[in-house]
Image (tube, rainbow, N blue to C red; front, side):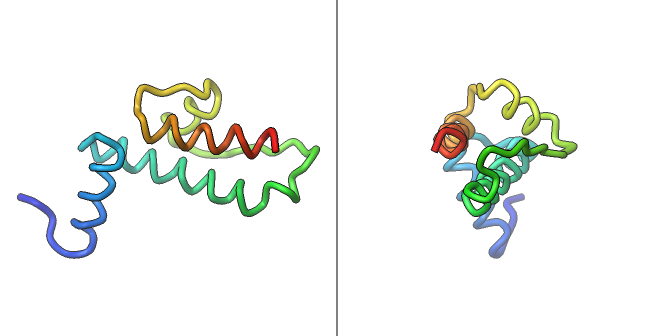
Length: 87
């Protein structure tokens, strides 16, 4: 049965944007988005510093190591991360 309320609407929007309905993948994309958001906010303070990402989501860790994904939303977020790393 479809999820009702704001959570259901958010999940539907996430599925549409990601092009996937796999809830685990949607959670991984949200975590990557959180990392990218933090990078944008703190990126200038991290200039010329080594930054360590500690996470237990193997999807996110893999994406940040390889900067590759078959998912279009993940590829877009990774492009944002690359831009900020070279900015």
